[in-house]
Image (cartoon, rainbow, N blue to C red; front, side, top):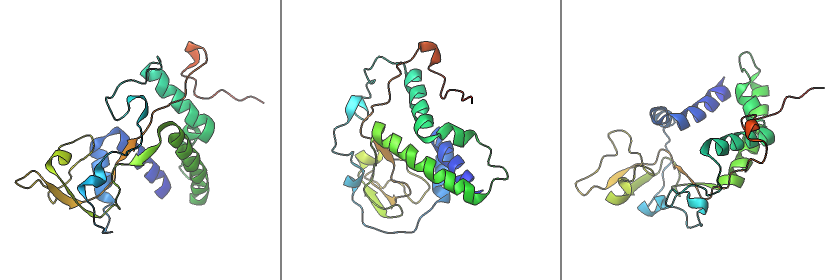
Length: 193
């Protein structure tokens, strides 16, 4: 039950900021470390295809839906992601779920790394104290202030504890659909023996 719940919480957090806030609050950590405001600066690596910079489209000519479906098909093809998510976990043995999840997790991570090179926004341990200057604290795309303990002071600076380091894609090179336009939504073919 724990693994299934963790996976559901993981994906629900992507869909809903309120859910992400509740999950972050539930995972309240206690590790400590010294963190500077520069820890939230974007990576120095070159960001490809406009991701993170101007927000420009990939320039590949594919629609957003086609790109999303092609990425989902790659996750299915290489990690059996859709099979895993669509499989009912009711009554399943925890050890079997864990074994299956480890493989899916590792292969999904490889797909995301290849296409997006995802890195943490903050170079600090979760649970560490952190102080942000006013300009950084105002960037709602990179910083979400939770609760009352992390409130801006008179200069607009925010001090608190890092609950989640955030994520940033340092490139965006999703797979390109090369099949028939009518087949783009087919994430995996039927298999018949």
